[in-house]
Image (cartoon, rainbow, N blue to C red; front, top):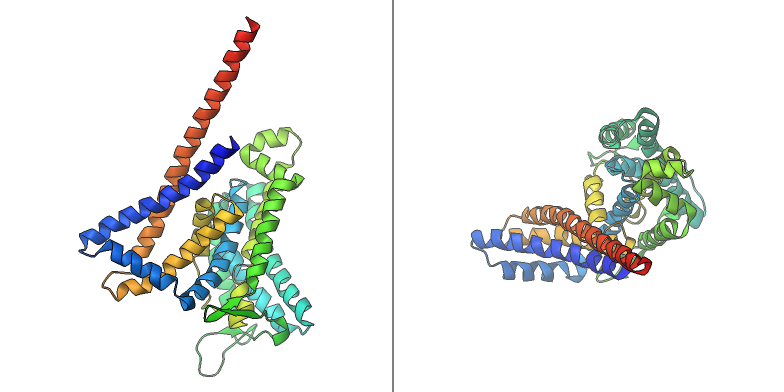
Amino acid sequence: MTKSRLFWGVVAPTAAILNSLFFVYIILKIRGVDPIEMFKLMISYGFDPRNLVSEINQTVAYYMAGVAAAIGFKMLLFNIGIDGQYRMGAFFGAVVGAAVNLPPVLHVMLIILVAMLAGGAWAAIAGYLKVKRGVNEVISNIMLNFIAAAIIAFLLSPNLLGSLPEGSQNLQTNPIPKSGRMPTIKAFEGEIYTFLFIAILVGVSYWIMLNKTIFGFNLRATGLSFRAARASGVNAPGMIFITTVLSGAIAGLVGIGTLLSDTHSYSMAFPSGYAFTGLALALLGRNHPVGIFFAAFLWSFLERSAPVLEFEGVPPEIVIVMQGTIVLSIVIAYEVVARINLRQQQRAVGTVNAENVKETK
């Protein structure tokens, strides 16, 4: 059974990606463009050393969003509030980081801790509303995303926690001192954020927590059946709340790599859209840390390769079509896989019952 799950776990996302490529192939053919040449151009451009560095750095951010979404998925929760949680984490991490002056390692650890606390605290609102008031987490998180953006825009006023550098119209927090910055690794004609190692640590911790701890067992049990978990003595409402907070804490780290190794301050120029991307990556990676990593790299690779298409007269939005097709295909593929696994289990049970009947006779 384990081998079967592993087999279908690899086949399903592979089939989804191939289906997306085939769909885009047809679109490019209709436009009179050679699809094979376009794919070769994207691969060549995407694996250019300078672009590869940007893709790795973006992969780290996407990976954190994917893990945050995966934690929620294990509890059957759709954490669509990753955008707001990540903004809260990056903003307050930047504010606290700029306000203190500590030894290098402690300074960085403090910023990371504040980011996790801010993201987790913001997610806790949705968790409380779901557990105590029965409010759907999707609705509350969508509203919280807008509220987070509005609060941060207000706090970025020069009279409060923001500043306006000379010659710029982009409000931002005060810069973080050098002691609170993370170094970069020079490779592939660029600089890779060392926050990559924190992301790896988060992935390993997520896997250990999920598969090797009682908390992880209770989390999965509650996700499979709320009533059954509660009947067996698990504090199911408490698990939902804790999982929501934990997911938000990881989401708070999404922008920290960029903050500590690149911008050193937070501004409204920080990108949005991590919520939907994180959910898509968790689906594509099947909530497994390794699968999410490859999905995150694929996503960043496609986005980085998109601009080169415009030079060939192909709208770069074709990449968005490809990403959307992958998500739709993976949902369908996993549904097919679930039905196949169910039939295999039913056959196995039927075979065992038949053998028991024969032995009884």
